Length: 397
Image 1 (tube, helix red, strand yellow):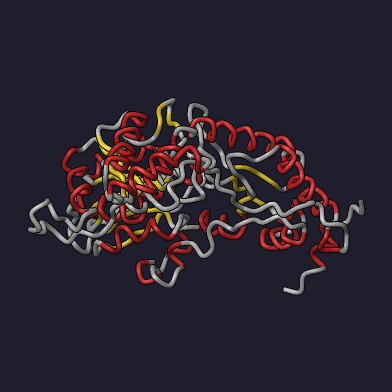
Image 2: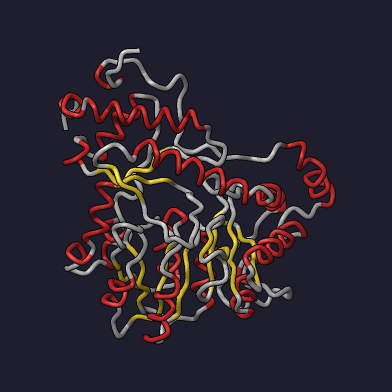
């Protein structure tokens, strides 16, 4: 094989495309009887399977309640709403996060106050979070970035000391452990995603986990228009019901959560072993007593040492038929929808977030990823590094 990168005219290293994401789904025959039962009964939304999903997840997490909803985003909207935070007050959250983190507060007419992340863990930095707090702040929203548990105890102590509520966007968190315990019982509530990029898949769906019965009741009623059963709407609810078909898929997928987390961690260990010898590539730091779900595996590319910048590396890998994704660009405080919430000093306060925006690159990772696929991705990165100068010259930007 020609050892030049494909972008320089060499042979494409992958014999078939290596996609960025590949959902691991249970076979249809395993779910057929339950799907037929749901269809024959006519109970196809917010029925027994959705309730069973919540019960099983609550038991797994060690939380008092877990409520199935149509998406993590709508779960976050309802969880924030349940806290009755003063309209126009501020929620402190990281700028380096997915779009939905900002939507939960904004849909509840709250303002965003951005904090920086730790450069190594990629999670919200409690010191930056405290500096972001003002007299108008009412809550902190932590994020378990890529499945790496946030500094939970530090954030809780900060929230308690400043009289604030603490929520977690745990979209990436199913399969993650903090001090040997699954996420789900921390803060006022945690909100999980079951979309196709996650370890447990409902096609679309989410779960709100909480030890607070009032929050659980609010979410349970709020997901059905806030109709308590007599059509006397109690508050402005939404349609966030999970269908029975989604719940059945999620229940079967959930049975394999432990295996999925183990396989992803195994694949990441192989990635680190293979890429650790290449200058200019570093990895997200996970605390010794924690486990990341590795919803995503993101490397940080130092172009001075590696020789090729993040976006050019992504382009060179695409030429090898290897898909990657830049998480996140733009980051929250630079997005059109949220720019108005950024203060004039935002860029100077969020230097780590801006650095990760231009240096972090997420590589392909899935629950059934084969060792050979990991090795192909690593070999492609290694030969791009070996031809860095020529690779750079191939780009016109």
